[in-house]
Image 1 (cartoon, rainbow, N blue to C red):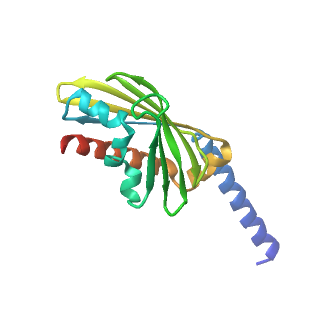
Image 2: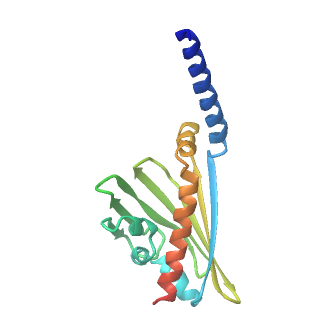
Image 3: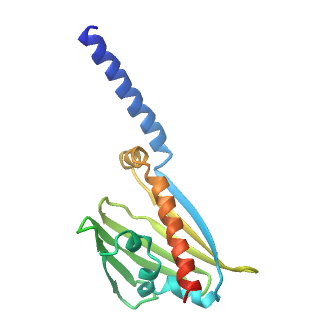
Length: 180
């Protein structure tokens, strides 16, 4: 077979792959993941487990995945402006999350500033609702990104990994409250 034909076939396959990837990535430029859990505990216990950043190590999926992670809380814990800083995976993970809004026993808003392994600024919103079976915690994760970042998220299946991590975090939150 002629080398020109081989290069043409490979070139068409690469262009088709990139085109398909960019098409799929366009849907990942804005990600919203909603995860819920019902926890058997008082509204105060559940709310405070999320509100006070010093409690985060009890239910952090990132700390569960990297037990050697270093962390520090800065500011007045549980109030707007308090920050949870982390440095993990031997310096490969770096960033912080900050409380930006607190509505007593109903809502906590947090923004993240991730510097490593990639740059991102996701938002986490937590809603607390009394149910007959306990306290429902709804976590809403939002991430906006450019097309190139979205392409790599598609390529490496990042959204599925984010969904898995968010679920793990709420499962750990449930265990932290119910096993106290």
